[in-house]
Length: 171
Image (tube, helix red, strand yellow):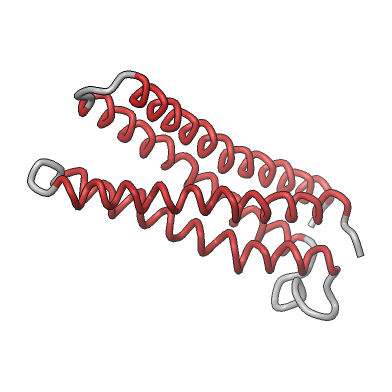
């Protein structure tokens, strides 16, 4: 591939990374702000909580679109470098690329798949039945909160590792 195409793929890959990370951080900070507000002003807030949750889930859709775009552009970038077909990982590939791809494959992708499952299937299904089974809804929200907190820790280590590898290309 030409250098222009390779650079275009890199630019799209960076845009996809921003589209993946930005909405996730923004939406989650909004949820945390709502939780802080609830702690200061207790009382019935079901309508506000429902609105915050539905907006959070809407924004998370953009995050997940960004993630699919990120993986797609990453694969295209690896292909443009002639490293597809088993050449991107293993003894012949650059070590920095090996580290990046293993972190993506073993840490980031499984976490995102689970997050997609919770955000697009479990929580909306429980939200639809909230009045008939409020405990199941609360349990689903607590599970998603736990995943987000764990994800913050896991991705908080994985993302800087990936960024370090692609920026400095060590080893």
